[in-house]
Length: 214
Image 1 (cartoon, rainbow, N blue to C red):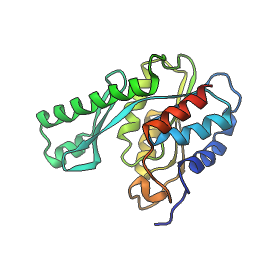
Image 2: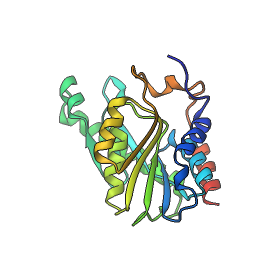
Image 3: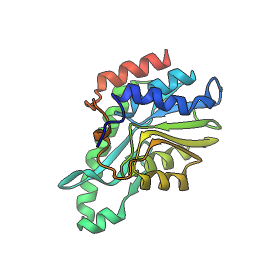
Image 4: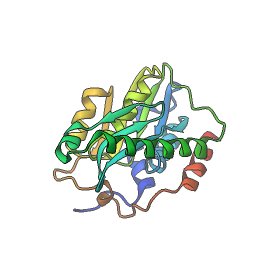
């Protein structure tokens, strides 16, 4: 499978070109899904000259299949379950609860690590661009959409460099707009479409968030 992007920053610059119609609009906010979505979103926010923040979502990896999402958990307690995966693997409620508890603790840790005491950007009545480095099942993005809508934005637009066609189709049913630069016919893991897919660190997230809000 050919690589589509050099790294997340280059993918963000490409994605920003498809979102250029949102440049210099006072009602646009870019929300990044940490950690991998942050370098992508930073480039988008810089190009659009829009404020950027993080919106924390944690994938619930299926036991024994960590890359397979059985759901996702977002800031504010929003929980999305992938019942097809749960039924297919026979995952019990006790195991689900254990995974949710673990991911909730990590979500709380990241909230403190990335924000300190800074309040999240107000998205009420604004156009929210939800950005990640890619989508496989879409479970994480679904949780983010559900959680963001509770904050009463005007619109929620999903924007990713690469995704499975199925995930993009699902997003079109629940988001107000979807931008997927590439939907390979045979989709593998998101990282296979990047030459450099090194893990984004907490320090990088803090640095880019600080630069974006400066």
